[in-house]
Length: 147
Image (cartoon, rainbow, N blue to C red; front, side, top):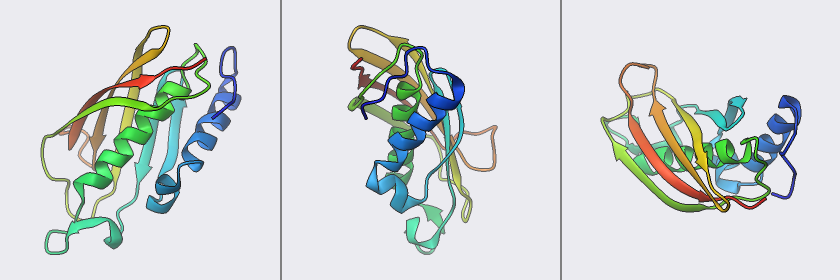
């Protein structure tokens, strides 16, 4: 991604984050949609689909799909940071799965880029199904931050 975010207005930041998500083939293939974007934050949703289920008997979205959603959401949060990342990539991402998602429900990830150094952005994220009170997973990560 080679677009400037420094000094960008909300509409430009949203356009750049959308382009970031659309440039990732698996994000398109999985059906991810950017729902919200703020300075250093993002919310991406993933509707339930039978092709995304890990165990056909449970109807629960596979943990790897949730991982991809959280990673993508973290990247979008970094790209929307006001300090203006041109490019980002995952350095490290730790995901703690707290419970199985509810069968036949989509997942929504929320990520926040809470600290940026000269070359690294630090992000935290949560994944939820329709129950906002009990996260499905929580993540912390470090991402490259190239201006």
